[in-house]
Length: 207
Image (cartoon, rainbow, N blue to C red):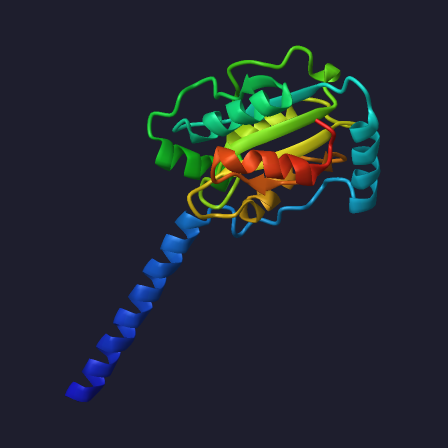
């Protein structure tokens, strides 16, 4: 009888531990149970547009970025400096009071928080770099709001992220869901500003 009770106790402990692990992973990966379609252009169409824009004289470039700690801001500023691009900060209209919980909930609910400002002359740009930190293995929700706020068709959208360890590939499902009909090209994680020059050479955009 004691052995049976002991076995039941062990089973219950295992069940509780598995439940806690599942709950932790659900919190850590808030987008994991959503079906996130890739709405961007195909590779061939994107490559064709990339070649057209790369060959264009006087192309205009925008570096738009969302930053909370300042790391992505520094990367965006370095990128802007090296390309001569205009710089624009993506900022939520209401600042986060508890960024850890609020950002997780936004990603979980697939929210689109209102932004503080707009790019008045978006139609003038040929290339739009979009930078952000990796939050919960996903794109921060304000970036999705930004992507869905403009007609970016015919432009080259180049994502970049900053992260201590997560790769940008982890964020692409949440990024691409906001890129219907858009040419998304050359995504990259920037670990240090010293990597930017090499990345720009790989992009081959004649910047």
